[in-house]
Length: 502
Ligand code: RVP
Image (tube, rainbow, N blue to C red):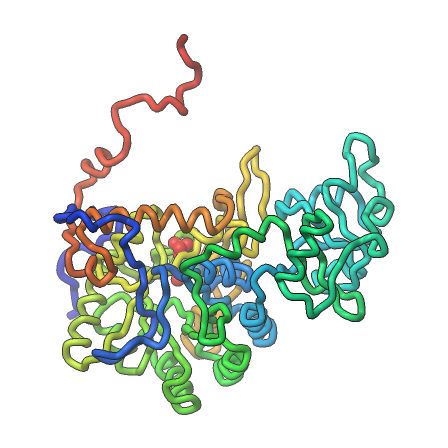
């Protein structure tokens, strides 16, 4: 007879934390959000840790090099998406490792024969007012000029005026050479009262911009996550098909931690991938595995040698796996069961295998709940896709700014390796959707607000660290009636009231 799990499987919104005793030192400023990413033996330090418990999802619409840099600055890790060629993915990893704080690869670029209308469209899409004019319209083409808001007046110029007619041409630009340090670049910016300084190589090819507005922010990133050589830490997703080619390329490019990206991780394919890493690199290359949703799945991956285990099937905002295939489990129940298995495994073997709760974080407090239930960190897709730094288009829909977001199992991503069960079949039906999410601005502001909330709730639970939260948290299931009670109720919200009575 089939096995039936005891009880119902629940998700985050069905739980609340009950406050514990908070002593006077329990204030958000004293909270440490440091957390392990890779496994470690009792009494030893993990090889990879983070300063905040957040990683960005292994998705085309979420984690590229730009996202990775922005998140590492805040103390977390992005896993660069694997649904692209080995070469392109390795190049993204390398760009993160080569990134020099303050030197920005231009994200708004155009060719000189385009028009003022194209400039306006680009500005709308990227939100940036400095546009590089390059021969091929790319970030590293030959720099022919720069367009900023000072170069045009929409009211006085025809929208089909060619960019070459109103750009500030290269000959009139103040620029700096390849070897310029950030300090020198900033001095040039101050001396000439510039807003941005292009850095070019000996062939006039654009390398970076240094922006005046970034100057102050470089000084204060207390949580930034750096490797031993002071480079940003970055992760990368791999699959169970082309790992023999992909993993060496990612390791060579400098990836600090890898993760097998699969919708269902309790499989022989994952073990084969981990075996490949251990045979080739021993313990020097770190690799997480997943996703699983129960004790058995966790133990399988822990014994196979995974450095961390990812938990979650079907809870992602863009995921339709549950309704398509009928597999999955409520995310809270999955995390609670796997965390228990992780603790028992630690007790028995002395090896702590961190777990990551992946998908289904809707409210900031869900992060705190996941941690309290035993997760060491959380992976988020929708959350990060809303920011300036995500690789997708920003669009205006009925007056509201939105960002595009799509699942790896959607027709748009066609990441069949993620859903591959072996045999001939690729991805023959969709398990994800293509959609919009409300645009939310810069990553820094959002992550900082989210973490203030997490730290504040931790203090309510009397916890100053994540392990302390995991020990002290008291959780309660809530009825659907009390969920209604949790929001504003039986009042008429002012912002929703059509007219104000004077
Ligand atoms: P969310 O943060 O709720 O948007 O969920 C993101 C997670 O959803 C990813 O980390 C991944 O595990 C899962 N995912 C990605 N694509 C798809 C899909 O197309 N079904 N699911």
